[in-house]
Length: 372
Image (cartoon, rainbow, N blue to C red; front, side, top):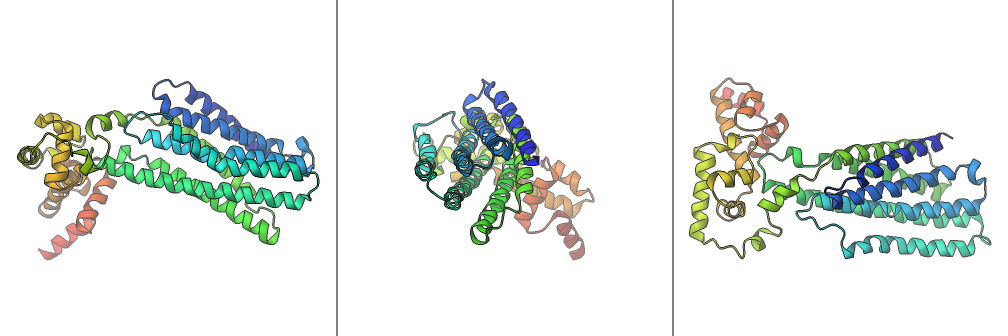
C-alpha cells in the first residue's frame, strides 16, 4: 500500500511537470523531450500502482506481462532525457532529428521480441521462468541507463569546454544540477542492479524496495523543479560568439591573415592586461569584442591561435596573477581580493587560484609571509 501511495505521488508530479512543459511555446524543441520524459514516467508509475494485489490479484501471467510493458516504457526514459540535455547544450536549435528514432528502436526491439516470446509461452511456462525473462530485460534496461549516463557526462564535459571559450566566469552556466541528477540516477541503478543479482543468485527479495521507491519520488521532484527552472538563454550567446566545430575547422575559412590576427591579439592584451578589463565580473567574449570593435569570432580565433589559451583560462590567469600580488603586499581579506580582481564567487576564485599555483589563497599568503 505504501508503494502504491509513493507511485501515485510520483504519477501526479510527472503529469503536472509534463503539462507545464508542454505549454511552453518558446524553445519548444528543448522542452518537448523533457515533457515526453515525464509523460512516459507517469505511465511507468501507473504500472507500479496497478501491479498491487488489490488490482491484478496474484495472477503471475498478468503481473509478468504488465512488468514487461513497464520495462518497455522505461526504456524510452534515457533517450528522452538525453535528447533534452543535447538540445539544452546545443549551439543550434535543431529539434528532433531523423536519426533519433534509433535511440528508441535499438533498445525497444529486443524488449518487444521478449514480450512476444513471453506472450506465446506464458500459458505453458512456469512463473519462475517468466521471472527470469523479466530479470534479463530489467538488466538490459539498467545497462541502457549506464550507457546514457556516460553519454550525458561526456556531453556536459564538452559543453563546459565550449563555455570556456565564451566566458570568464562559467559557474552560472555549468548546469551543475545535472551532475547531482546523474549521481542520483547512478545510485538508483546501483541499487536496482544489486537487487537483481541477489534475486538471481540467492532468490532474495529486493531489500532496497522502500529506498528505491523513495529515491524514485526524489528524482522526479528534482527533475521537475530544475527542468521547469532551466532556461536555454545561453544558446543565443553561443550562436553569436562561437560557431560550431573544432578550433582548426572553425577558422579555416577565416578572412584574417596572421598579421591581422596579431593586431587583434594586441587589442585584446591592451584591453585586458593594460586596462585591466579582466576585473569586470560579467566579462564575456562578446562584451570584449564589442569593446575592442572586433567580431567575436575573430577574438576567439586570436585567443586560440595567437595567445594559445581559452578565453576562460586567459582572463582567470590575469585575475590570479593580480590576486597573488595583493595577497603578498596587502592585508586585504581573501574575499575582498577575489571580488576586486573580478571573481564573482569565492569557490571559483579558490578553484582558479589552486589550479594556477597549486595552493589555496590563504596557504599562499602564509607562505609569502613566512619567506619575508
